[in-house]
Amino acid sequence: MASNYGERNGNWKGGRRVNGNGYVEVRIGREDFFFPMATHRFYVREHRLVMARHLGRCLQPWETVHHKNGIKTDNRITNLSLQTAHTHSKDHSQGYLDGYEKGLVDGRDHQIQQLKQEIRLLRLEVKQALSRDEDAQKIAMEYCAHRDG
Image (cartoon, rainbow, N blue to C red):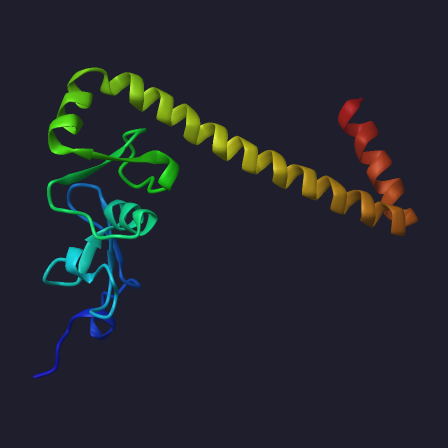
């Protein structure tokens, strides 16, 4: 009888899914160093895997990985901290909202910086294109006059 797990399953989405609690899970193979952290279906919560890879070791079951901004799918290492279950619970009860707001701002700041860099690159590309094409220069001047006028 053929197995319907993994790539052989018609619902296969590349080994990445969001579980019922809102955490991202990724499928890893038996040969992966971090396989001992996986479930019996070969899935591991992505935030735990990111932290384990960062530390270069498997996490212990009693170690908790906390999302600083409260967004369970934001698994950037800068948004994660390793804690004990006790510390994690204490942090949540002593100001989760403050940490959430700070993390949310940090995430937004990161996105804003990425967008600013993208805008700089696009402006440079436009300038280079305009310097090569006189017709494009005229169109750009007309657009700017129309937009500003």
